[in-house]
Length: 136
Image (cartoon, rainbow, N blue to C red; front, top):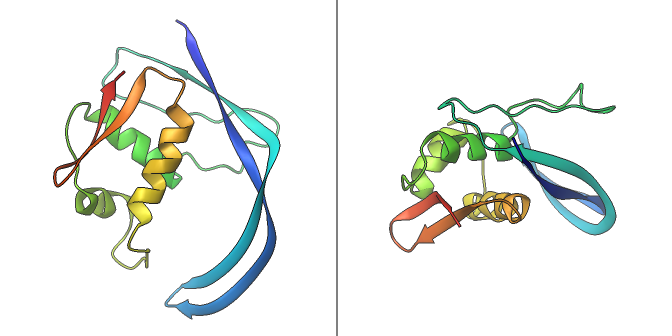
């Protein structure tokens, strides 16, 4: 099977200011710079209904398989062509005790779009309906 290769670029926090705390999370302000350092991500299409994300490499042992982008990708892959509202995605990605920003889903969708932009998949947004994964 062929793999699609995409790059996930790194960023450096130049400044970080903690402005407060809500329950178990900190409110922060930060200044970041993007750099020309990246991870290579390889994606391959499989025929199974169960998808899986695996991290390999020198620094991969402490990376959990269930970060937010991975969970979002899994939601879309397991239900292709099905629309999800922001509320549905929020319920599936975050626990009730987590404090998230009002535009968190838009931020994670944008990050996921960047990661899959060179693949055969695309995240479609239909106003007032939601998001879904489709083939380009």
